[in-house]
Length: 90
Image 1 (cartoon, rainbow, N blue to C red):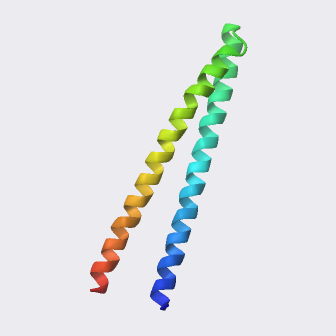
Image 2 (spheres, helix red, strand yellow):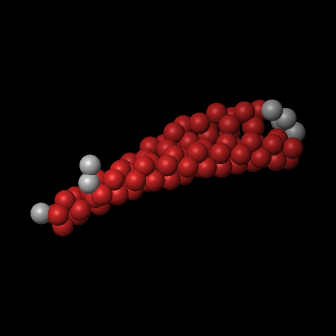
Image 3 (tube, one colour):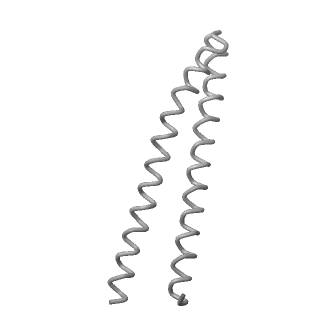
């Protein structure tokens, strides 16, 4: 295995770790925002668990959509960089 192949593997691994970190942080932000906004709205309207649960369950599909968006964007960027590297090596 050449030095170039090792560098490509390291870049790929780093990019995948960054993508997983972004997805995890986005999921955490969506869940926390849903809970805190729901608790605040429940306190304002006096409907203690109802709005919190509604926002929490609405946050699940939003989190999945954001995960797909970030994953596709990162993989598209990786694919573009890989094509540029292949053109440079030819």
